[in-house]
Each structure stands twice: as structure tokens, then as C-alpha cells.
Image 1 (cartoon, protein in one colour):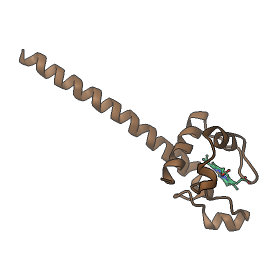
Image 2: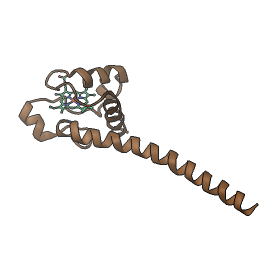
Image 3: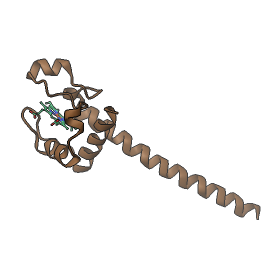
Length: 109
Ligand code: HEC
């Protein structure tokens, strides 16, 4: 009886640990992808890297403003995948592009 209870408690703990671990991994994968491939231009806070704006002469580097956040995921994922203006097409995998966009969206909240 005691052993069964212990197994149940352990099993539950493992299940919870596994689920939260997966979610956390997803969020941090987005952060890693964003910081690696996007922050250089869009800034760690999504408001745009001022030094990069000077170099490439772009004012459109803020991606946490209304102009961007009101666009759909489809629109923004297309820009990320194909590039736009001076933004190069992303070399990240499709999953990473989604995770990076999810992270970028979280910066604007
Ligand atoms: C070399 C600099 C550079 C890099 C790296 C870069 N971007 Fe951009 N990004 C830009 C520029 C410049 C624009 C504006 C493009 C235009 O002229 O419409 C832009 C536009 C965007 C937009 C659309 C904004 C809007 O309102 O239409 C999104 C979303 C975006 N970038 C996300 C990302 C993400 C996510 C990454 C990383 C995977 C990334 N960018 C990497 C320079 C960059």
C-alpha cells in the first residue's frame, strides 16, 4: 500500500516536471534563436538596435510597436522566412522562426 502511494507520488512529480520542462525549453529556444539571429538588428528588447540602424540606415527595426504587433503571424513569418527590404531571409528552421517570433511578440507585452 505504502509502496503504491510512493509510486503514484513519484509518477505525478515526474509528469509535472516533464511538462513544465518542455514548456520552459520552448520559451528558451525562442530566446536563444532570437538573440542569435534577430537581436543584432532588432535589439534585445525588440525596439531596434540603434547602432545597426545607423549602419543600415533603417528606422523599421522596432518590431514591438503597434505597426508590427497588429500584423498576423502569417504575415510576419513570411517576412522572417523570405526577408524584406534590408532584412535577409532567415536561415533558422521553420520551428525556430516561429519560436523567435513568439519570443519577439512576448517582448512587446
Ligand atoms: C540585418 C538586420 C536584420 C536581421 C538580422 C533581422 N531583421 Fe527583421 N527586419 C529588418 C529590417 C530592416 C526590417 C524592415 C524591412 C522592411 O523594409 O520592410 C525588418 C522587419 C522585420 C519584421 C516586420 C516588421 C513589420 O512591421 O513589418 C519582423 C516581424 C522582423 N523583422 C522580425 C525578425 C526576426 C524574428 C528576426 C530573426 C529571425 C529578424 N527580424 C532578423 C532587419 C533585420
